[in-house]
Image 1 (cartoon, rainbow, N blue to C red):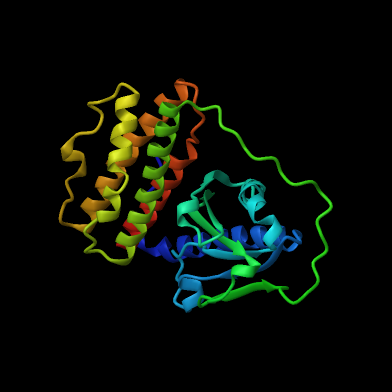
Image 2: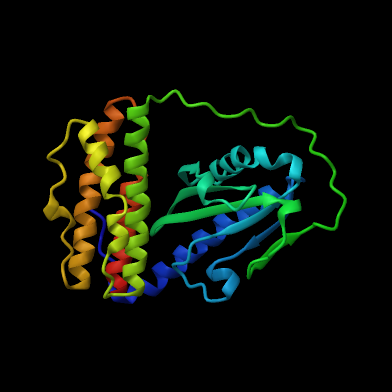
Length: 272
């Protein structure tokens, strides 16, 4: 069992979490700089506003030459996988800006999951520029077309029920981690973010033949901050067992989700 992070080591753990996040950003930036289709890359969100902290996630905004917009999702997946600590990721076009797209990925850090949420849009669509920290900007430079052929579109062999299992469990890992971060910042959190994946996770349990795995009491939010951490640990254990069961059904869900979330909850408990 992983040791609890005690108060004297919280500062060191936060520093290491920030270092892991910065290394992830450096890896992505280097990949994009070597890709002439990427014309600019900014950080927006908390980094763009200038109020980021050690727990802030990365939200790159990428400007892409118009004719290559359709290829960027597959490219970002490849770049994310090259970091060496990639767990999972996928596109969610509904989260992207008009004419563009979105790719989100989870990465293993020493003290929990690292979130990378990439937004992109075509260069011709750039009108309103968000508050941003500039990673690089070559919009005014002549683009030298890439020499490598475009990446082929990805296809999935998963059946519909398998996709629902993967989506339900994957979304749970993501939102439990975000709920934990929110709790670290606001000890009086109502934990509403924890509830977002409930329908999908319960559906995944049913599809796995584990209807009784999750009970209404599993979602009852206690009063004290450390009891809320304990609740997230409880849900982590149940989701880990569902992950193991899903993998026996031929799926390939990473066990690192459970390990990273457990470590992150150690950090959150130390902060609280």
